[in-house]
Length: 274
Ligand code: MG
Image (cartoon, rainbow, N blue to C red):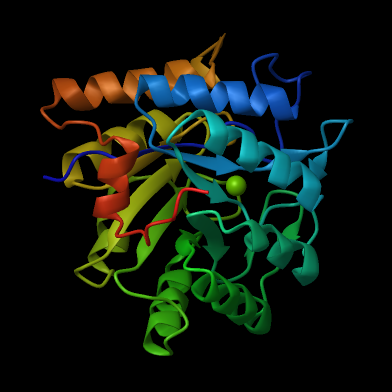
């Protein structure tokens, strides 16, 4: 089996300090959290930005600052979110790609979140995919239901995304797919055989879905974006979540990828060091 790629999603759009003091929301907190998670075994960091009131921000300047500072201080693969709840305005979502992160998320369909609709019309998906391809940014296809896999494959067929494709199954979000192993088997069996995949379990499903993925040869995403608890009643930190899944994977006989291992496994386009 390939080494395990651990993505950390430290911030997301939802958790605030009132929910957990451990969620990084300022630029410095996000950068510090990313560095610590690399030390514990993460190879990718999935970036969201927040404004001064901890609300999701689509300010490209904040994204730029976070990305630049992480790049200066470590070797992590940076994956910028192009989605989320900070507005669906195409211009701001595309602007984040100008800084050429190695990866970016791409949700290939629409879904209901618990309290809102997350709308990604076909022309917006095409525009984001085109821009990613133009800058050699590898999309992580964010899969909230089965139809989104087919939409992602169609992007490949239409030469709007380069193969092999990489997928992230988001499971256990209220309004979307339940988190269970039967669904997971069905999802990854539906992928082109050269694909790579990872699983994001929401809330308490994070740990169980991650362990299934370790055993099945997939990869994992952890972090407070998806789950703020280490176990029932005990708040987590990002680095402890990374540390735990890295330890479990090693115990189960699967080594953990470094960022450079992950670059090879995902076949990222090499960047010149600026
Ligand atoms: Mg996200």
